[in-house]
Image 1: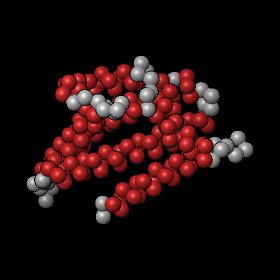
Image 2: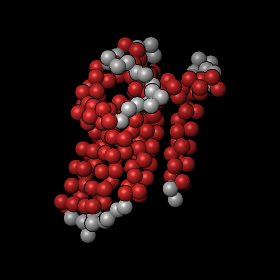
Image 3: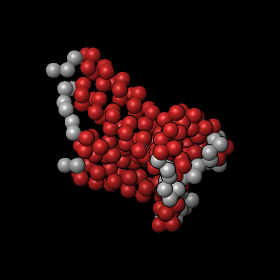
Image 4: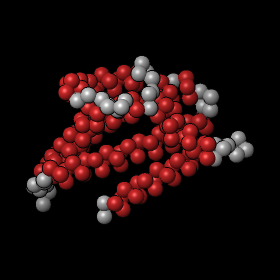
Length: 185
């Protein structure tokens, strides 16, 4: 039987860890797509995540242009979140299932980030078709989504001036979510 305080503690853990994990994951993704480092939003993410990432980078080097320290921090934070939430419920967990749950949750979060970023980019393009590059958030949105949109545009060129490639990418992202859900059954 869960009490109010157990559920409240679980909510606080999910929110605090979730926001910080989102910040680290966005920083990792922005580095991966080579988004503008000097963008104010990027600088905010760097300032927010540096206290935990800097010490890790001294121990864990990057490989092939991938920030391995960020990945280790993401898995550690998500694993700690999963462990704390299950501990509140009175469950004892082995390390391997916690790590697997952390990786799966991070994959889901990454797919959701791309899904909502593309959706937001499409919606914003209706209101500012040529102005997306004139603000920091728009620049990062384009940088983040373009690696997924470019191959889809090659597959489906614009029809009558309409870019249908976001539909293809959104469907593929949903298929990935579905495949991930079926793998865990």
